[in-house]
Structures are given as structure tokens and as C-alpha cells.
Length: 487
Length: 137
Figure 1 (cartoon, each protein chain N blue to C red):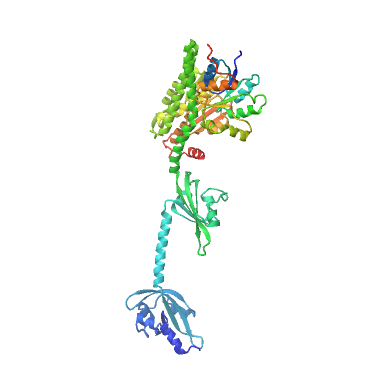
Figure 2 (cartoon, rainbow over the protein chains, first blue to last red; figure 1 turned 60 degrees about the vertical axis):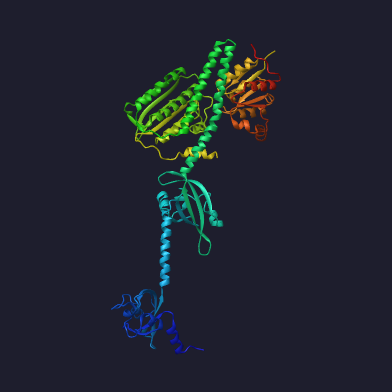
């Protein structure tokens, strides 16, 4: 059965949208029921008045455009009903042609966009909220595609690692020239699983951080993983605390052996004293007593070092008279040096002036190094005149303390372990802790210690402290990594 | 009767003096070496009845020296006592480790530091095959 004009009439009337037909002069010549319900009986009226309550043609009038261009137009408009309600609508226009193909009228179809607009507004709102969350979360967040290019990065990420969007994650995050060997997003891309791992990264500012990173898959509408989101939290303070505790544990472990040797030495001294008295051998008593004194002194140093280390006090930074500190320190060690037949010299540039720092700590730091040098000379049995030279000079922005000896020297392995807790200078009168503490003190002042050495020729320590006070706020990564490696 | 000879391999000079005096007071003759290398030099012209070896020394460790001695037909039957403050050596199964990793038998005894003098005398005496003598006058 084919539709009759009456059927079309019915369709026109009953369509659930506003249908109206307009002539060239913007008069409404026909309108359907829905239209009449919301806009009233408007046939003969101007469409701009009927639909929008305007007194003149709308700018960008779709009807006008249709007449002009001869084809359908689609647009979004806001209409005003008789009850004053504003209605967002989508408008389609269709040209109506006469038998000659000339446009004689335009039909407009309007569909209600209210619900659509509401959903659109809600979507925008929730997107904005999500974006805000993403931006402001105090973790480093990035989203990467399969090609490992960063698609999104939040503020904390950008501030810490740079504007990464559009660049490879391995370049921005890890400062590599090529993809990582172990790619943390891989399991998410391959199997759609979430993983967690810990790593060490470096910020733009050069700060090294321990982070805990969670990598999760992001699926597209088809359910395929086309991106991953990586969220990292800075756990450096936690690791520092942990390493401190571990260090203290390690400390006790690593020095326990040293203490036992010292106690054995003490036993030895006492045995010699006692047996010396029993056998009436005064020279043995003398030898034994010297052993006792020596080992008590070594034990005392060790205990004090442990107590110092365990306390980890804050620096008291004040101006230090460098000339005074260095001269007094060297003077206090002269007797010991001459007893051991070592020439201890001091050379200070007169203009070294004042250094901001903790005088007690700086003194202890330098004393430990001097002790170490004296020991190095003592243990070297070759018959060469032994000397330890202590030089102090300015080299802006640093003040340099150089301690050079021509003692036994160190091989590379010893030199590399020198400042770590593992280094135990057993057998000589060190506790194994002194240099570790020295390095800590130097680091805390914002400076550092470097050592150069050759077995058989001697060693040279260079301590540099900043001339302008800037105590370091950097975590001690060397210690942290050393400690955590033993876990 | 000639006293038995003991070689002390130890880098701490105070401990060397202690052990030497103590052993000599108890009828032994003692010689010492400050590290593994020097010990091998000393052993070149001197065959002790027992060797006391410290573990942590500069250069090669005492256990390293033990492996060398055990592998050499000249010295492999000399009784060897490890003297150490290291907990790991005292607690771990030294024997099976040395056997499985290096194919040698472990020390004949292990003594901890600080040294118990009575234990030292008993161990050394047993290893050189005689009772602990009374202290010489």
C-alpha cells in the first residue's frame, strides 16, 4: 500500500518534534501539533517572532541560508516557548521545491536538546573535576600510549620532570637515550595487569628521589589496553628513616668484630701485666700496661664514635675562625705524631678568614682524617721519612682542607669503600667509623670529601666546605643505597 | 723435649704479642706473620705443628689462606685453628661451605674472640697431640 497525501499529513502533524514550513519572507505557512502546543497558533506570523520572540531576522538564519544556498542546513538554536521557557534545539532545514526545481519554501525540523544539554553539562563538570583531581594530586602522574609517548602529565610531574607531554616517557622520566630495558608499563599493555615497583629517579633540579610507582592499564571503548597511567609517590623520607635504622643495625654488626678484637687486645695486656707480676718480670708488666692503655683508648674512641653516630645531631652553624681551629687541632696531634716519628705540618693561607659551620663537628671531621693519615704512615714499615701535610686554602665557593700523607696508601677497592660502613680498618687504631662520620659531617655542611691514593705512595684527602652557609638538605643517597643493598 | 711450634697469622700486633707470650709461657714456641702473604713466606722454611689463623686481615682473608694451605701437599696436614670475631664464621657451617665451594676441608677448630685462654690451650694441645702442660716457670 503506498502512502497517500493524507498519510503524509498525519505524519507531519504527529512527528514528536517541531515542524514548520517557512516562505521566503519568513512567514510560517504551516506548523504541526507539537509546535502549536508550545508556541501557539502562529501560521502567518514571522518565524523569528514565533520561535524566539524577536522583532527581526535572526543572525545566521537557517531558513535564509537554505534559500540562499539551496541545501539543508543543520544548526543549534535556542527557542523561547509561550511560557517563556528557553529550549535548546537542533534544527534541520529542508528546501521544498516546485515542479521547476525552484525553492518555494523551507521546512524546519527542531529536536529537543534539553536532555542532551544537561548530560553535556554534567559531563563537562565531571571532566573538569577529574582534570582538577589529576592536576592537583600530590603524586607524579603520567599517561603513556603504547608508543611510550606521554599523553598527559599532571602538575607535580611537569614541575618535577619537565613538560613531558609528547615526548618519550623513558627520556622525560628516566633521562635515557633509548627505551628502558625493563619497561614497567609492559605488563599492563601485555596482560592488562596493575603492577607496583620502587625505583630511584632524578628531578630536573638534580634531586634524587626514591619513588613507589603504580602502573595501571587504561582501556578504550573496545576494552583494549591502549594506554597506561603511572602514579609515583615520593618515599624518600621513609627510605631515609629506614636506612638510618638499618645503618645503626649494620653499624652494630660491622663493628662487633672490631670490638671483639679490641677486647682481645685488652685481655692480652692484662695477661702480660698479671703474668709479669707473677714471674717478676717488670719489662713484661710495662709492655702489658701499654697494651691495656692502648686498647682502652681504642675502645673509648669506638664507643664515642658509636654514640656520636647514633645521635645524629643537628649542626650548630656559627662563624668558625679557621686559623685558630686548624692550629689548635694540629698542635693537639703533634705529640702523637712525633712519638710515631711522623712530621706533621700545617700550611694556612692567612686570608682564609671565617667559615660558617659547626666548629665541634668540623674539628672532629678533620681529626678523623688526620688520625687516619697518621695511621697510614705508622703501618708502612718502609724506611722513608714519614710526613703528613695539612694545608688550608680558599678556592671560592669553597674552603679547602687538604691532608696529604706518604704512608701506606690504598688500593682502589679500599678507596671506594673508605667512607662506607663496610670499611673496617681493622688492625690499626681506627674504629672504622671515623671516616664515615667525617663524610657525614662534610655532607651536612653542604660540602664533600674526595680522596686520591696510590698503594705504596700515600693518600691525599681534600675536604671542601662552602664559604657561604648552605647545609645540605639532600638525602644521603650513598648511605641509603649502600644500606639498602644489604637487605 | 723440644716444644711444639705454633704459627700465628694475625694482623693486630697486640693480639700477636698476647698469643705469643701466652703460648710460650705454656711451653710452646711461637712465630707470627701479619698477613696471608707473609705467612706463606714464613712457611717456606718453617713447619709448625699447628697454625692459628685470623679471618679479617688486610689483603687475603684467613679463609683464603686456609684454602691455599689445604690444597698444598706440603701443608695440608698441619692442624689449623681459625680465630675470629666474625659471627658469620662462627655460626655458619664453615665446613660444608669450604667443601662445596672450594673442595677443601674446613679448619680443625674455630675459636671466637675474645679468646678464652683455657679453650685455646685445650684445642691446641689436642691438635698437636699432647695434654696441655703446666705453665713453664
